[in-house]
Image (cartoon, rainbow, N blue to C red; front, top):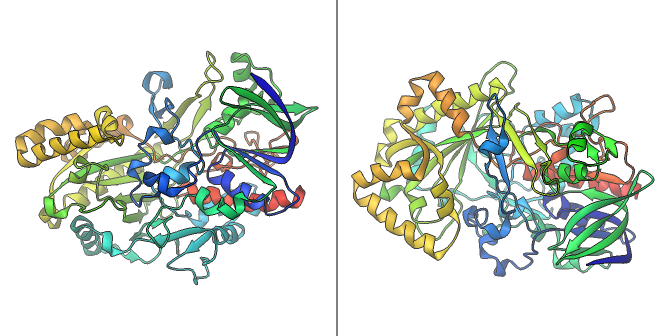
Length: 572
């Protein structure tokens, strides 16, 4: 079925994630700007109806298939063949109003000032940290440091540190271990950029409830604005053009196609979906579009290229019973550790590690205390392409993590650092074994929240806790690529080969429609997010980042949306 709507908007925003919610709220502040926000997923408007989304423990939200794109897969690592279809594994991306901010690990950090100064040095002078800081401040309501010049107390997005009340004996032991090594404890992760441990800054309110950007920005008062319309469970199938200008979209809801017009279209569908939408509209690398049978509207070779992520790996410690997280599920990533690799060409504070109190929401997950670490200033780049056999389906995602040797060397160094920390004799009273590995397929299946999985994992946890031999038999089954970390650190070449196999990401895809100056042949947009060669078409999400920051990408994306909202207001 199809339908044509006579209604026009000034702005159509495609994607109701971290950027889209901010844009919709800020642009509709002007009564004269008619805004239509389109989101493919559901509208989880009432927190009471979605307890997993409001919970201070995020592990049930990001493992619930109701809130993600089912079937999306990606190739993480890098080999000479680079055949992503042969090694693609699940890659979770949000599909609901609020986007990743509604289901992520709740981290709310900004990154290094140098990240944004690098953007300015690359030909984007208005994106220095000095230019971005007012928008970092504008978005936040910092419950701990609101009076600090770096922070703000009256923005819409609450951020806080959870406090020592959620620290388990394992966390206390890890912090004492770090203190004994001369590693300082920093009062504010979003304060001065120096090495040390710190409480993770999280987007929670005073009642310890996660507050997504949808709940923070699209309040009942905002939703009541007559110039704002929000359509959920609606997917954009096409972009519409007239004489080289974007003039609207074709959207589908419940099988009904509708043509929606606008003076301006802003893609905020995320770093994986926005480039795919552009390519399906004939905007992208000409040779690839021809391969897919798509007529070329504008040859922009950078669309889908420069794909970046934070390459990660981890260890798991088997916790003694008294060292585990007890009681109701609570935030499980209380402590971060920033450190500098010292490698040539790499900036200070380029590495990150988390001390984690549990591996999953269920009883089995409570037995383990992971050390999760990643290259926070990464250099490896991959690509995203359409599938020539099905250009309208999921794109082919190839991160090519560790393809830049600097990333591989630093991840191996971080692995050795984590082993040293976990093997410290002071931890023997809280840890009864340290193991290397990744998330096995079986562990992924049991991560989905369900009563059945809860019962099954509780029974298994009881068994491996009581019978050590059963534990030794079960762990290789539960932990993918299970290895003894001591053996790995004894063989550097073997360790690097192992990391190429197990490398993961942190669900921070970015940079696939990067901003750039006019002389950057691979740039997709200008400094204001306008797509090159197409009037009326813009991108605003993590895809336009020129390079990935040393941060969870949610808050930087919101900052960019705050900044670009002002730019759009000035030109609409």
